[in-house]
Image 1 (cartoon, rainbow, N blue to C red):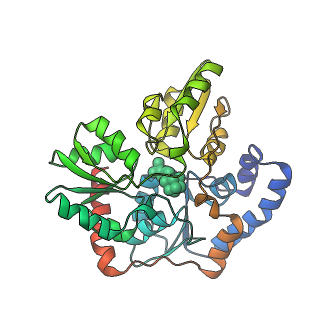
Image 2: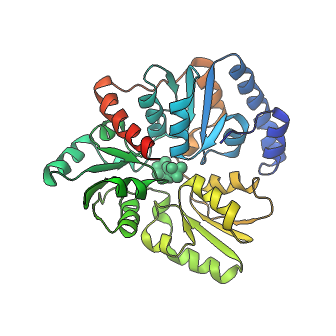
Length: 325
Ligand code: 13P
Ligand code: SF4
């Protein structure tokens, strides 16, 4: 999705979620980033979990992992600055081997990506020969390289259903695997160690409690939550699918079972809704700040690199996913 552009519209948007002193601190940096951007052929992508100053203030495009992967594959810009976590920037680099892909903080990781290595995948392939391997994009390039096809939270069910096999190795998110198992009925070999450190904190009791206190409540969960949480919700989907669902279906009160900034960013898109926020923050996403974004452009840092022998098979798995949708 194309993000806000002029400084006046940025200021207006941010005033809805930021305190006046926060806005006064952020605006000079946002202006500096806009100035730097105008001198460079750069495309700035911002994940839905970026804080509002990064999300509304400096992104050319915003969206979920799938949408941003598509944009990364299509952009003509010479440089991509990916405001998100490392595996997302790495996916952009896999799709654009000849471009300079930057991330403002290379230590912005992901508990799912850190849970599994390429050797773990090779061992599972030895244990279950002939079963196709699907990996959620929240993993390293080396893990993607061992994979038949990638998926995101937006298309996991579609990807698994596209495979002509009743048994699928699905890595590394245990809870997404459980959700996919329920929806496809296929035998899913999963990875118990893989959990999102944000979404594993939610409980079905949180939802029951909110339903007692709010009439007219729509509960929307991310599929990285366990199945008792998604089962108690009205809709489960990727971060961008959440926004679409609010637009077409939601009631007056909306409870988002996902990372904290999602509610902040959606609040300005839906001023008529009341957001019941359940603030769990992702410490990795929160590493991306305006000063680091400014420095990323100023010093062209930090370049994401993927060795060719890993990038080639990883690209095949990501492109196969993009063909499916
Ligand atoms: P989306 O693909 O839904 O944006 O999710 C990415 C993510 O990391 C959620 O924790
Ligand atoms: Fe990873 Fe969870 Fe953070 Fe998303 S929210 S980047 S899955 S740790």
